[in-house]
Length: 329
Image (cartoon, rainbow, N blue to C red; front, side):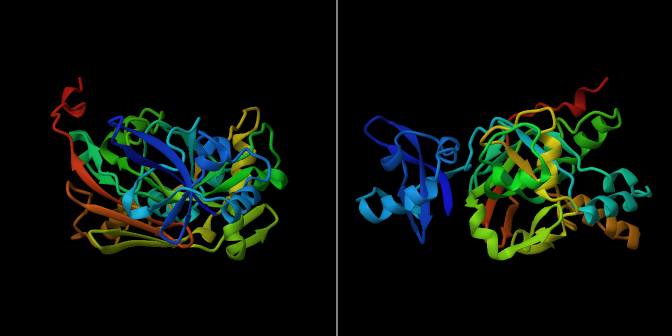
C-alpha cells in the first residue's frame, strides 16, 4: 500500500485540514472516512489495518481526491524522533579516502546513527527555504528511510522487521560549512543538518517490497535502484541493497535501553556517490583542476527510489540576511 498524508483547502472555514489516504493510480481514497480523524501514526498501530482498508474500499462509497488536486504533506509530519544512520560503507570509506583518512574499523563492528530534528520534515514538491549560511557548500543526501509501526524496547535483530511499517525516500539536506566547523569539536552534526529533511512522497508498506527483498542472517536488504538528479542532470546513482548494516540491525541498536515509538523515522544514511561532498572529493582527488559543484538557489532536486516513488523540491532563499558564520568570535 501507498499511504500518505495530505491537505485539502477548506474554503468555508478559510483554513486547511490534514487528511490520510491510500493512493491507487491517480486517486487518493480518504481513510479518515473509514477510521475517523486520526493521523497516519495511529492508523499503522491498528491491528490488521491493511485488510480493514481493503474491505472498506470494496464496500463503502469513500471520499476520493485526485492526487494532482491536493497538497502532499510528509507521510509522518511530526514524528516522535528522527534518527539517521551510517549504513553504506562505500559512502563512508570514499569520503574518508577523499580527505586522506583511513577507514575506521569500528564501522564494521556496529551500526551508528545520530538524532536529527524531527520537526524539520518537508514534503515532496514543497520549496526548501534556506538561510544564507546554508548556501555555504549546500548539499543533498540520497537516502531512504523506515517508519516504525510497532513500538518496543530492546528489540532483537531477528524480531526487528515486524516493527517496520514501511519505507519512504529521504533527502537529508546538509550545509557542509556549518557541519564541518561544529564537528571539529567532536559534537554533532547539529546546525549543519537540522533545518530540512525531505521525506516522502508516501509511506510504502513493507509487504510491497517483498519481491525486492534479499534475506540475510541479519535481516532483509532491498534491491532498489536509487537516483538523484539536479536540474534534470543525473548526479548520483546507487542501490539500497548495498547497505552494510540492515535496518533490523539498526533497530536492535537504536532500541537498546530506549523505547522506539510508532511513527519514529530512521534513515539509511547516504548511498555510495549519493551526495556532492563525496562526488566533489572524488573529483578533486582524481583531478586537481576539478571544479566543485554545490547546490544553489533555484536548483531543483529530484530523487527516485525504485518502488518508493519520486520526491522533487526547489531550493529557495529566505529574505533574512542573518548569518551565524559572520558573527563568529
